[in-house]
Length: 77
Image (cartoon, rainbow, N blue to C red; front, side, top):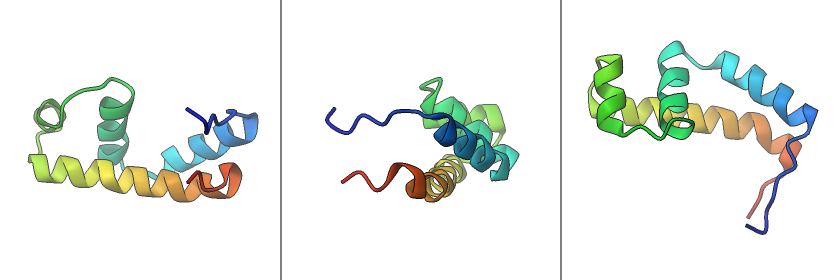
């Protein structure tokens, strides 16, 4: 894509610190979804929560990470 973000040390540090602020459930759901490509259904089963709760956890995680990273990477529109 056109908006290639160079993952600088600063971005990695921000990301790690933001990941640390997620709840264990948010972090696990986010990692399973975005790093492992698991389905919402599978993540829900693994965490023992409903699909709606799974989606909410992933959504909250993404919002928190986006807020943390925006000052560093700028808003890619």
